[in-house]
Length: 315
Image (cartoon, rainbow, N blue to C red; front, side, top):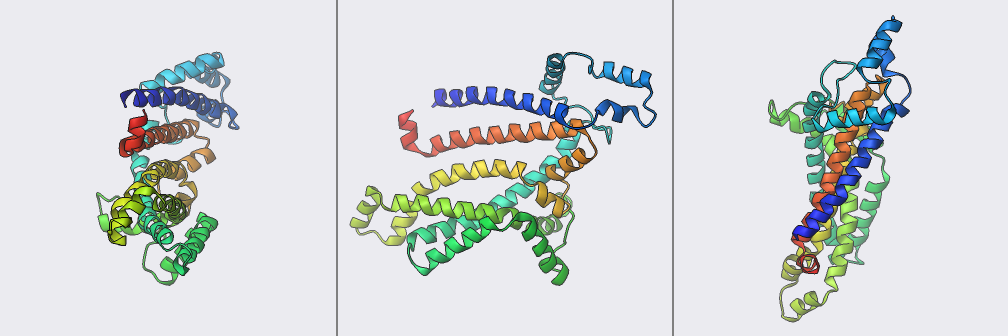
């Protein structure tokens, strides 16, 4: 088990190094010159030359990368050109917002998707099976931005049940925070619920045909007991690991939803940074998001082994 975890960590390290190279080169590929932005409207040649020297822009590209990587390893992601604040401070402000949105979306997806998948598998070929598959296909087909706009028009504008946009910290007002995050969570969680439903159904169908399930039924156990204790527990293992990966995707893929509902999270921050050519913020957000995704995938691999005795025996 220890060797397996060590091997997964050793695989994650070069992946993370490749991510840092990509993030660094991202700044070079973006249009515009950050030094000209820093120099202001006058763009005095002496000021530009001083700034290029200060930010080591005259050094070879490989040296610029090594200097930047050294700062990153010390926790210094640079300074925002627009606000003058450290990027790490901005990320510390925005990351909890996106995590809250991701957690609520994941809870909504699991509460809807997993029971629907179990029901669809248990009642295979019936009306409920076809209904669950139709709903899942609809959830995968509907674009997030369209669903978000429709929810705002119906729930907020016409019915006035929930606020259309904005954000409130749960530490300030938990009820208001839940209200502002409910619709964005439903928008993000809809497609995830459909994906979880399909995977849960597939996993349950495989488990229900296993020998130990047939043995449990042959012993005279009630069908509910067979499904709950024998089938569902084993079918849930790949679903749990899939959920961990999907949670990582939520952290990186909430850009449109945060823009629609004006949520001050990671997605909105990176969009604003791109429009303002705030390259340090773009680099910081992409690097933190990619690192988080790699760590969550590593956690999913370890979690699957911990939950699956057969995998532990095979290692």
